[in-house]
Image (cartoon, rainbow, N blue to C red):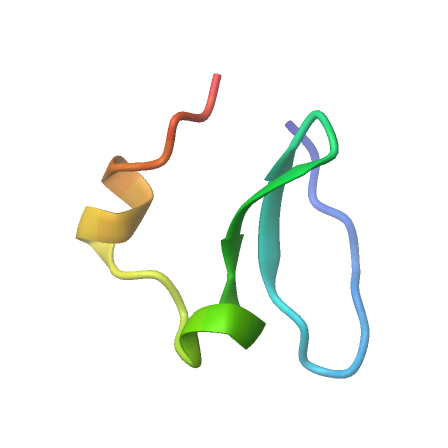
Length: 41
C-alpha cells in the first residue's frame, strides 16, 4: 500500500485501482469502524 497525494480535498482509499472508500461519496472522513470494515490486503 502506498500514500498518493491528491488534490482538491479528495480523499480516497484504493486498492488495485478499485475505490474502497471515497470522502466525496460519503461527505466525511472514514470512522474507525468504516476503516476496519474495508477489505484491504
